[in-house]
Image 1: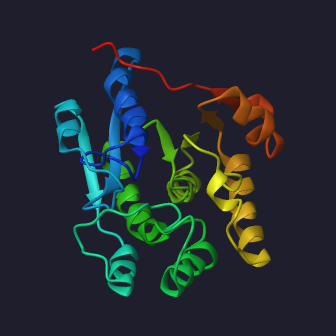
Image 2: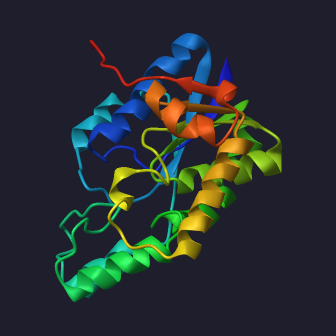
Length: 236
């Protein structure tokens, strides 16, 4: 059986719709001759938590977790939010109402490029190289958001010459919550440059709708390597 290294930030006990896609890939890939290996974070910051999803992880799946630099703990202290409270992980507040929220949003949008999980990249690449050496996977697969997972996978692919599939559950720079946010031109341009580089370097691009291919990703790279794999449901 071939092996695929899956790079994902969202993994149980993370809840919400995003983690479901990766979980179901992991569940059914062995039926097609692929053994998943997971690279994720330890103690991630999630907007939703659902520990019951952990029972859906196949028992024979190897999961590697790394530490990472998490800015949300500083954000919570800055705004006086209790540590146990969950917060959105994309944009901190889509409609900031006070100065502290506006400052925190500005930092997230203009300093943390492409997202607030960029502090995971160093640790994930370091651990990923160890995993590749020991597990000898045939393929790398990364699923966003957050887009940082694609930067991790790209680095691993470049260093090991393994083929790589980049999966997009949402758009990157064209995502809706950037529409009314104030971003510096240099930040927007850097983000767009990173996105285009990922789209061009990945061997294949998968996303959840044909519309995303035609109106977004297919305009930034070879549309022929873009594949629509829509979300579905599991009868089991």
